[in-house]
Length: 124
Length: 124
DNA sequence: CCGGATCCGTTTAGATACTG
DNA sequence: CAGTATCTAAACGGATCCGG
Image (cartoon, rainbow over all chains, first blue to last red; front, side):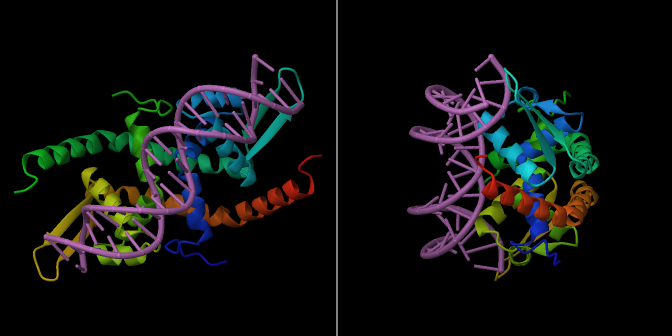
């Protein structure tokens, strides 16, 4: 299989797009702590809409990174769980998060400096 | 500083959003091989529009991950370069790419299986 | 009741053409 | 060459409604 991440149709590039997706990262983050119900996910991943949650979960399931267990009960119960492949994502996403945590302060400071410069000397 | 990645306003969560961004990953990928001109980036990051490129570069510069060197020449020349902080992103993005490469085949296969199942037994 | 599909208004990305 | 302006298309979010 060919891999040129800089070609728009490269499958691995597309995969990074999907994984790097705003919600996917967070959903996998929650699921890597253990299986969770739809409702739990909706609560833990604060700010996500039901639409995006089910959409993201479906994509994840289709990609074989998450399994969906639906129980025919009343009230209904649906549990989502990371697959073996999905669990391999955990360390890499954790590292991404660690990077973000250690660099957030610096980035925020940089932004302030940048915005300051834009105000005081935009047309100089 | 507080860090709750599952709160929508968490700064580190927002940072992950930015870094994990489709184009940002690729731009940093190119720049981690060395400084590059705007034009080079436009060519290497195939498929990106000039708007998204300059927008992404501006955001990266504001975040202090990239420096912009503009030379007052004719024709103009602008060189972008990773900062020290920007370079620290390289290993983590490389790992993300490595994950994508090793799991692309499996994901693609899973999708085929999934789509197949949707066709043959959607309403059963 | 829980899980999620659908509809619609708003925001954001993308393509293209144009300017300093 | 390096970007901005403009327009179009898609993605997102919220509210609402439906099936099990």
